[in-house]
Image (cartoon, rainbow, N blue to C red):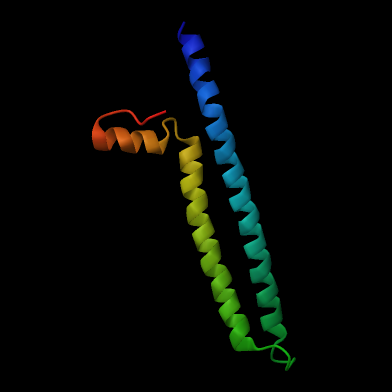
Length: 105
């Protein structure tokens, strides 16, 4: 009987887990894109002294912006991973801790 209850709980969580995994993958893809931009800005910055078409101040700004974006994405990824991988969904745990009741299904 307990086995069936466990399987029923898994089946109910499957769509949420699938969505959580999708979010993680999308955040990882965004992180890769941001790293690629940072590498490009860094490479262009390294040759900007020899090429008057490149504005080193603007490239510095873009490099800093890419760093900020990476930090934000890392934070979002950490929260999404914790939510996905925790044995009790954080929303349910937070709701239960706050109200003493289970979160609505």
